[in-house]
Length: 245
Image (cartoon, rainbow, N blue to C red; front, side):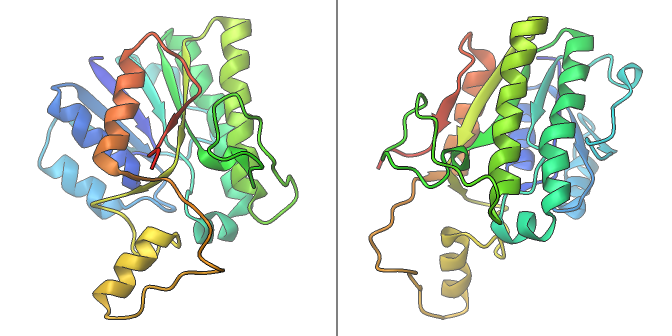
């Protein structure tokens, strides 16, 4: 992997992935439109490392192949992931997951390189099976306020599979569960960031509902190790990346 392209590389997971890839000595090209990603953190990274290139681009717009001829692997992490973000931008979220996936898959197909899609545990929806195994198809509401994220990711997975079947593209799918760690947005809106924010402010750690709900929490370094292991393996997935406890 001489030069990895990370779409959504200015986000929480994208930046951590970029740093991990650089530690292995590979070049990194970050693409982000900074709607939810941190431009300041991405610029801080490139200021201290000439092995990282930053490109401002919305992946829902096609990418010119001739500008990325040295890319050898594509990671698609481009999509708002927190509930407040994707509910604020539902159409942008859908376009990023669907049109963005098509454009990045076309780029991977043109360059004949591998592609990894960062999917989500949310593709299982409100599961009737727990824990969820990769062969479970889920229980998803296609018209609810979360559907822009859930269904967009489900379409992204379908695209990976069909590009593989029709064009023989080497596509991989990981389904990411709740991830926490350095660089996480304190206003992310999910339980771990809410706990940390409240703790820092000396506020109670609130539990919604009756407390019987469960979540699979995964530390970001473990998640990134799983992503990179999948990328370097012959396995294509889908594979759950989370915590069994």
